[in-house]
Each structure stands twice: as C-alpha cells, then as structure tokens.
Length: 332
Ligand code: NDP
Image 1 (spheres, helix red, strand yellow):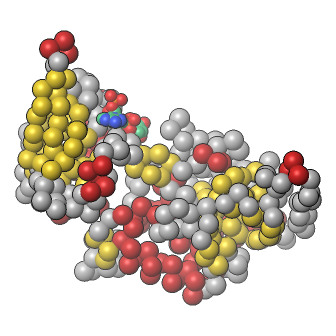
Image 2 (cartoon, rainbow, N blue to C red):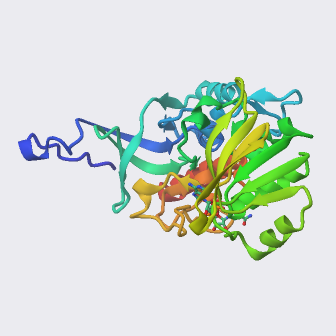
Image 3 (cartoon, helix red, strand yellow):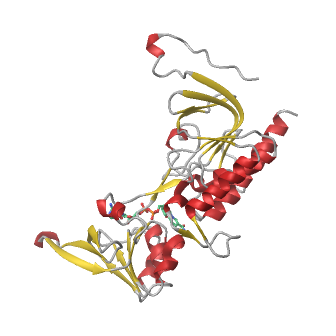
C-alpha cells in the first residue's frame, strides 16, 4: 500500500531528502497525557503505534510539581512521575516510544508524511497530533531562577499551594483574568499586572475581575524581575507614568503566575489543517477528526478552553478510537 519516496543521491537534494523511510499504521506526535492515552488505546487496538516524544518528553506536566486534580491519585502525584507511569502503561501494550521531534509534515497525499529531526521520514496511515501548547513567559532570567519556587503558568495546577497568600498574575486577556479569578477564590490578594491601561479580556471577564474585591489591578505596570531567598518573595515592577517617565514599584508576593497566552504547537501542520487565529487546530465538533482524513488532533493543541491533563487524556482516547475506526473502514 505504501510507496516509499525515491531517495535521490543528487547533491542538490541531499540536505532535504531523508536518509531513512519507515511506514507505520499509527504515528503519535507528542508525549503529554493526550499522546500517552492515545498510545495506550491505539496499542491495545493493535495499531502498533509509534510515538515521537518531542522536545519536552512528558509535555507541560513535567514542569509542574504536584498534580492533585487528576482522578485516581488520592494523595496527588508529581507531574514527572505521572508521565513516567503513563509512558510505562503505553509501552506495556507495545507502543514504540522514541526520542525525536517532528520537524515537517506533508498531508497533501493519501499517505501522510512526517519528517523526524529533518532526517527520518515516517509515512503513516494515521497521524495523531498531540503536540500540546506552550505557555508564554516574559523571558526574564528570574522566571527560570524561580521555576518550581513560586513561578507558574497554570493557576488551576498550582494555585492550591498559595491558599491564603498574596500572588500576582501577569496579563490582561482571558487567560490572565481567569487565572486571577481562580486565584482570588484561594488567595488573600491577587495583583493583576497589566502593561496597558485596559484589559483585552472578554466583557464578562473584565466585569468580574473589576468587581472582585481581592484583585488589585496594577495598570501600566511591567515586571522587571523577581526577588526572594530561594523562592519568590516579591516582584520588581515598573510603572509607566507617560511623559513623567517611570516609577519603580516592588510588591510582596509568594506566587508569580504568567497569563500572557499559550502558543499551540501546530506550526508545521498549519498548511494542511484549519486552525483558529491563534493556531489551535480545528477538529470536527465532538470528535478528534481534522479536515484531512486520517489526521487526528487531541490535547492542548486543539483545546483553548479547558487545557487540563484529564481533558487532554480523554481527547487522546477519542483520537485513538477515531483512528482505529478510520482504518477499519478504509481497509474493510
Ligand atoms: P491574549 O493574547 O488574548 O492576551 C494576552 C495578554 O497578555 C494581553 O493582555 C497582553 O497585553 C498581555 N501580554 C502579552 N505579552 C505580554 C508581555 N510581554 N508583558 C506583559 N503583558 C503581556 O491571550 P489569552 O491567553 O488571554 O487568550 C488567547 C485566546 O484564548 C483569546 O482569544 C481568548 O479569548 C481565548 N481564551 C478563552 C478562554 C475562555 O473562553 N474561557 C480562556 C482563555 C483564553 P496587551 O493587551 O497589551 O497586548
């Protein structure tokens, strides 16, 4: 059924032609909860899935400390341990989990092509895209310095650890205002650090934020750095005073949350699939199917709304079932 590419030795083509071509029934790209759950289901359905883990094996959860809201772990579990468990479960049923990064795709023909690390070509009957999304950070060295020590890009994941404390959220869109509202229910005080003098969030979120007593909006403020002995104890901000210049402002906080948006990791597929304006892959409502038959998307790369480990896992299951049904119908 598969026709391997003609690999030319032509000098001109050398850099772009793969050195290695492999045909697979089911290729899974990405190794967060969506990818691993898809792998467990696909392996149990005899699809012999091959998974490429991507740049961050285990996905975003490996950057969180404790996961307490994933059903089945009454005592909680660390993100890395949970992802190791999911990996073992996927491998137990025969998933071929490999190190590597999908760097290019071509979904224009009957056989779907994905290049790994620009050198290996996978020709797949079905592709499950589970590449996730990456939270945007400000790019301050202190964000790295205090990673796991008070800096987070997920209020739902980490907010619980700041109960009764003061925290700050950066951003003025729906993500930031939702994070601020969530944290306001747990924390003593929430500073919302907004770089302009208006919010970009939807009207309803703007109203809710403005009407929440323990949220203080710091208009026209930007973060310059964080301070603290090993963990975050505060942030150095600067307030834009317009023609009058700038004013340095320090706030005391225990947690610093980023809410400046996520970037779905869909760039290499965007030419072939429909996405929204931010880049989230559009799937056919209630399914994991994209507009290209045989290509399925699950997890955060297609979900701007819920973005939880458990919803990602559920959509991974859907993708494997959709892939299995697609293959049964195709090969009937
Ligand atoms: P947005 O791009 O809408 O907002 C990003 C916010 O962060 C803006 O206020 C922006 O400021 C600010 N920002 C960006 N970069 C910096 C920076 N370097 N320093 C300081 N502030 C910065 O992203 P969201 O993630 O909030 O939303 C993305 C999309 O997802 C939207 O369409 C949103 O409606 C949707 N969404 C929907 C939800 C829902 O329906 N429940 C939940 C979350 C998101 P500025 O305004 O000055 O550019």
